[in-house]
Image 1 (cartoon, one colour):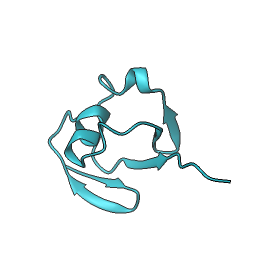
Image 2: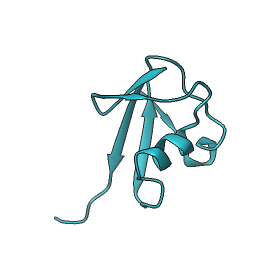
Image 3: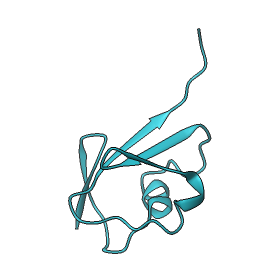
Image 4: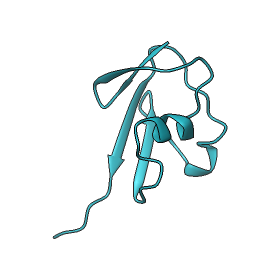
Amino acid sequence: MEVHVNNKLYAVQPGTTIAALLQFIQLSAQKGIAVAVNNQVIPKIHWENQSLSAADNITIIRATQGG
């Protein structure tokens, strides 16, 4: 199945979780990440259990320092 991550198309297996997606795109070890699926923010405690569906639109935001 295909999902959109920050406007980029990724092919993932059915049942892929948010945590597995982040690992697949090599973002799982980074801190300061927020994830929204179809414009709904998903708390980090749910990333291991939240499965993605075909054509989901995932937005990943990384916090940065600065001022």
